[in-house]
Image 1 (cartoon, rainbow, N blue to C red):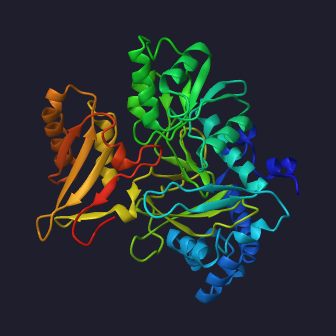
Image 2 (image 1 turned 180 degrees about the vertical axis):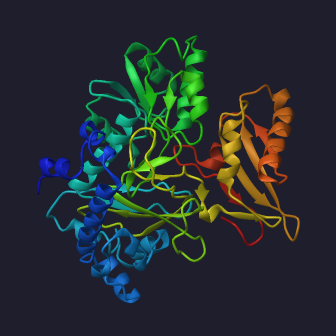
Image 3 (image 1 turned 180 degrees about the horizontal axis):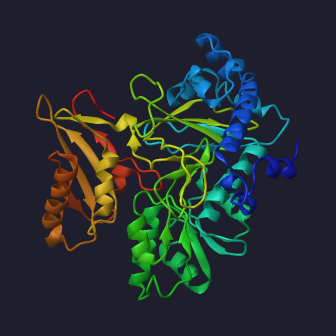
Length: 454
């Protein structure tokens, strides 16, 4: 089995300890020249991938015609449906990945935990798996973690990638790890005890679990601010950053990525969006209907091309996630790396309600800001003919006698900011788990309208 040339890896992709003194501070022309050179090399490599070669031939796309990222939209998009079709036609991993299992190298297989459809596998050769660690480690470093810091890895160890890649990212920073996994493996109270008894600087997990830990700590008679040694939470906070910071007294950051690509957008202390790791990705935003690139600042679907893989290839993958690209400018943190907006929702979750396009995640933004909510919610579209309605169920630890009051206040906020009357029902903490699926990636929307089931 071929080993990983770590010297080559760190020369090409600066590890966390050097990235913020080099690539992070590079001038725009340097960043774009590096990105474009890697893009040309990646297209040459991907042309040997049968999945992409067939698609490109059908579309009449010549990868040699691409000189800069501005030329990339000539290549066809592909999405999850195309990946699933490839897997069905060429089981078990698809035409785009089966060739990786020829015995020449080891590989790891992780599965998506998507909100709809069957889970899908992603095969990572050793280089790819280690690169996930480099990219994740940069996010941890940016949030304030440093060599020797003790961290609690509370991502669930299972078939998806979050826990092992958080582990790899922490190793690249030089952190010391306690591997707790989720509350189902190491009870939440036990995790709080570990955080209390050892100088834990951060917990690697998703936003709602951090709030659950704070609630458990308070229930044990502990002060989450005074009785712990936390420094920061790298995210993703899923819009709960202000609540997490208030609960623990430390900064909480956002990030963006998904199973196939690792962290591609990371948040600096200046906030205002997510810096794209441009030495490793080309990120586009395209129109929801036409698939054409949209101007800076316009909402659209995020399309990703990875520049770092050695196994499978990711070239113009239509993620279905909604965001917008922001104009390149020097950030207050000193970086010229381009920013994208925070995650704005899923294109396939859009609901047209009384003539207005609504995304459940837009509702979730105001749920997260509600002081009486723990941030958990689920949106249902229902009704028929011309009497369609949206109902959002919101978890709250408030006294049950206050639920109508909390619901009315949140409904008023939604009406003010979204311009729509949306029904609100407040429920007990944990009651939505059967609907959302629990875990890190929640199902936020169900369409119960006739002929529109999700």
